[in-house]
Length: 629
Ligand SMILES: Nc1ncnc2c1ncn2[C@@H]1O[C@H](COP(=O)(O)OP(=O)(O)O)[C@@H](O)[C@H]1O
Ligand SMILES: [Mg+2]
Image 1 (tube, rainbow, N blue to C red):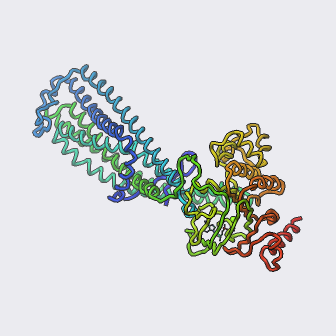
Image 2 (image 1 turned 45 degrees about the horizontal axis):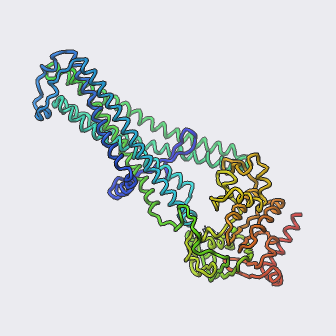
Image 3 (image 1 turned 90 degrees about the vertical axis):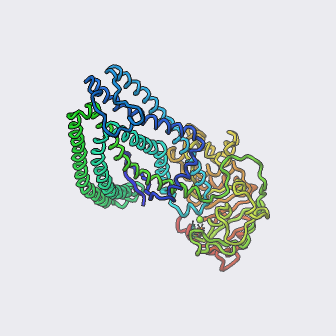
């Protein structure tokens, strides 16, 4: 299940699910590292800067310690060396270095200046590498999704999928530009910090190491418990988020059924569930924080006590103890940070797993880059279905189409009629090669559909559905959707033929008017006419109209019908229609029922079949329309 929580806008924000850290998953994650390849020089450089900046940070406490010792001249020099001293063995003994106060201040500022450069460079470079490689992953993923066959979309909840993916991608991005850096810095800090600690005073280092890991282990175990519990609260919160989303999506239903009180009680119950869990959590968290305060400060006091004893006995200087405590704090902090990094790593592995899974999918062979070359197989417009049978991949046991034989000559108008659920839209999908027939073949100009390049075939077919979807952008862009390089004149001409020029020019901004989710709302008839202009501009050999007029009122239907007549001129058209009056003049009417062709012929021929389904449908429609009057 998806982990989610509310962000500040009240929207549900998905978090990546965790995955186990194992060889398989790590391999998946490393496969995504291929995306870093183009930027490897910068990536490696940024790792160098991380190391340098970690090193430089660690010099700071050293200099601070030296400063304190400089205030008590001679103190450092008189300190006898600890028995085991790694740096002394290297022939390098910084303990005997004695700088003046001013020198140390200058050194500190020098160190800080260098540090700023290192920090700037590591953040800048790593962000650049992270953003750019992520952009490439995003683009590849989007391309992959675009080329997935229709069956993929009917089996997935696409909204959920894309939310999921964007959460996964931000997780990966975080990992590259943040977690990775933190991890490396942590490693360097640990190595350098521990070396310093042992170098300063081995005895005290052992005392410290006897206490700190113990606390760290308790903290990590306790922390995981708490995280698990707060996850429960998050899930509950997500659940109440779903209630909010649902009610606002269906707000008209809520209001029409006066279910406000019901929804209020549902929401309240869910929110108070969250509160209860949160309060239980608070008990654990409170205990945890108290324990941490006690043990962390307790161990600091203990180390200080022991260190102070060493100072008293002359085994250590005050400056060294200062250094020691600051280094210990760094080391302790790094330990604590690793627990969080561990959970980040798990999330990142989960994210890469899903992203890789999608990238591995086999997509359709559609073109993902512009291609203006002339068609290899231009279609004139004859279409033939030969014994076509079909079942949707999601429900392979239900045969939706059986034994379909159809023939459309160039420029003919073929009407597909029949009760809803008969399989008419499925035929349209097969014409567009959204799916492949289970058996049988479809021919365009007597050439098997399988021999066409998919994009080329679809470029020669236009589709006007019942519910036209306009994309965010100007009317102009929406009309040019099937022909992005169309000229202004071509667009206007198409709009005129589609009976759309009139209303478009009435908008103050004309063709530049923004439509779609963020733009103005157009009526069904207006959208339909823009879709028709879109199809006219595409100038296809074959046209598919799937109930293009059935949701329109009679006035706009008139306008749309006229536009459709213009569109159908000179093309092979498949017209799926609800209102039989609109297909009376078709060259051929094909009656589909229960996935097969029941009868076909002209209107007159079909009306002569006394027991025919078409005649029955026509009669019903007449009755129905008389009832309406
Ligand atoms: N994506 C799909 N997956 C599975 N079954 C589907 C899908 N789309 C339609 N169907 C089923 O196929 C049958 C024919 O549907 P359809 O072609 O849309 O009918 P029509 O357009 O004639 O009303 C129906 O039983 C419908 O439930
Ligand atoms: Mg349909």
